[in-house]
Image (cartoon, rainbow, N blue to C red; front, side):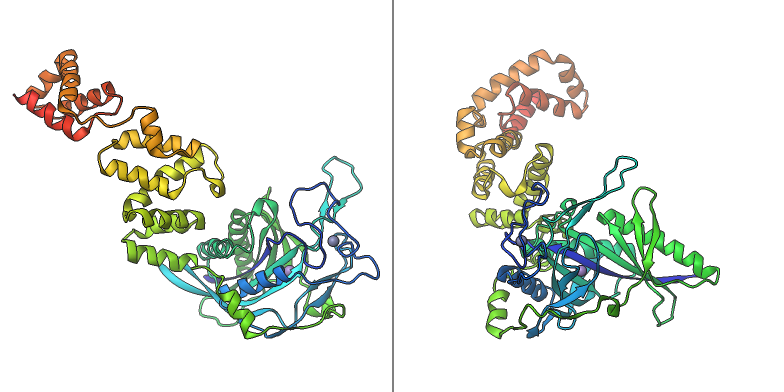
Length: 478
Ligand code: ZN
Ligand code: MN
């Protein structure tokens, strides 16, 4: 039987604030367990929460960037559930008046633009972290409350995705928006960004949605995609046998690459939601929304389209540039110096990215500056240095942050264009390669390329290739 797969994603992103959502404790990742806690985030009796304005603004910023309608009246609600990493036995979240509702985001799959609707965007607090000892026979677990109370943004999409490719595109696009707006560092390895997928199947042509399964414990984008694949075949096999799909929450087992049942799906009433009595509701005015709107930069997909249209870059090249806002900014800074989009694009996506990868550099703290790359490009353009030498200079610029001019002078790398000097080198190469000369005279064209290579080698890459080529031909033919 053929089924249509229906997928929705719930995304949790930790916001990049310095302090927690309801207290002044640090949110810094990786500290000694239970050193970033206070009576508020430990849920002691009698304490009162105070909302972190920055966190609220970040959430608002995300909701606006995701085209949501902003609920002008909003509040926090208590979501009651018991779990050892939740010291208050409830989570302060939003249920009745989510900050943002009815938004959408555009994704691009095989050059086709698709709109994915957002059900809601809301703000809530993180839980702590349970650590289960790996030594056999351990009959205890440890808990670290450093994470408890870190501001968390939950982004709930509508079930608008139909396959793993769309889901992959959605995850990347959403991550980029969160990074571009600067509201989360999105470090999946530190748990700053987490996805949960709900997956259901229905017969093709049918309108009614099938029972959905919620998949938790997806630690990477790869796990999300694998879980979708697994769940699709598990559910379709059940349906083929005439069995029913139960609404349940399942855990992804990364090692065995399969999902296992965790619990039957809880409903909203199980959480005993009610308005948080310790916090007043919020009324958000137009002025605040406008001032936040102004801080939202051009978003990745729009930026990519502008790069293609304005700079005649290929879709692929523009896609690589906008992959990271830092790269895209770098690119546009270079263009302020000299308008050579394709040239800078090549330097950035080939040379810069290769150096970053090879030298394991942090792209947020590059030593090379855009105006320096522009100077380098101008030096090539003027013939001061050859392309080959420029690569060497570039590598040094990456390491030291020095001006290209200084490196070229220091290392005496200026291109040799003087005919007399080049002629000398040519004579030397011709004298020591009689076989190649003979080959050339017999009509073997690649002998010329070989001789060119020898000259470049002899001149340590400094000979001007154009001059070499002309002189070499005239010497061989003369
Ligand atoms: Zn605290
Ligand atoms: Mn949540």
